[in-house]
Figure 1: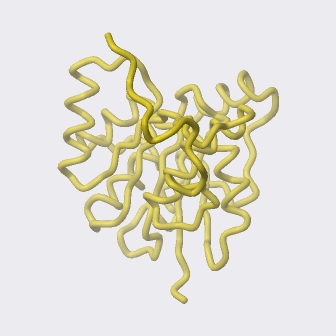
Figure 2: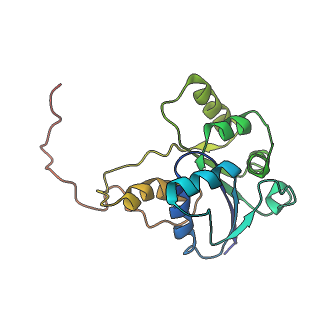
Length: 197
């Protein structure tokens, strides 16, 4: 089996828990090399939201380290996820501004036609955000808003977070323990109708 190589970038948007849960699941994925980069703001948000220093069970690169392997298209890293992805980072990716290792890594993924997933964490969205989402999508990236689903009947915050993390794993073509639509009985009967307006 070909070894998959994944870059995980954590930016300064709210939602550090998404990255932490992703790290937990990635530890059980076989034949996977993971590189991690935190932005300076991501470290601050992580401390505020999770009450600890930003950490990962994988090799961490400094956001200013342009000697990291995934800063070059000659590297074998073949997929990247930004989780959570701030709208500021998305804007820089959309317009080709490579001011740190995160945006350079994303640029490499796009120019080499590799998988780039941006788990966007913002609401509501302005037209500027929507235009940047369109540009990244047209360039070959995937914008996956951090929008939880509830049909799996999550019982905890981690369960809710996992609905987004598992979606990101699917988009990265990596295994996930997600419960799929139709994997469990639906409540109600076939004769149920939607309430009238």
